[in-house]
Image (cartoon, rainbow, N blue to C red; front, side, top):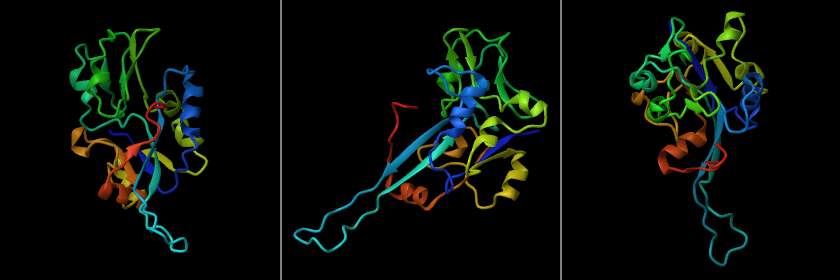
Length: 208
């Protein structure tokens, strides 16, 4: 089986409710987060010289990207784990087995999405596991349930692409999809298309 997330880039307002719900559910401290919201922006504008009535031409854009573990088809974190602690289970969820993890940090370094991190208290790898406990009860991940604008969905990747046509697997600032074949399906906004043409930057890098 496989598991993935859908994200509607046209709906997300950057409210970070998904991020806060995850932190609350997993009782994460200020130094840790399993889901984070990236603010991406760019573009330029030029004020017409000596003309105060003509609107300044611009191509400025900004959008938000809610990102957690993508439970990839070819997860880099599992490939580099020396003990097999980081693994994909029979539901397609990628997570670390604390009994095997030695806290080496290879998974953290390998993941292009920066999903795993080393818990400094436990000295073990930790990350989004798709809310396995909630799924065992027939509930969706808490981030999906919490989103006030329903920008998130989850499920079998084949079903997600049917429910949400027109998706892509990568928008800036994410790496190309062939890096790990993420089970992340994004409905891109016009701003994301503009970013692909002109480039941009992460506006909240220190926050994330």
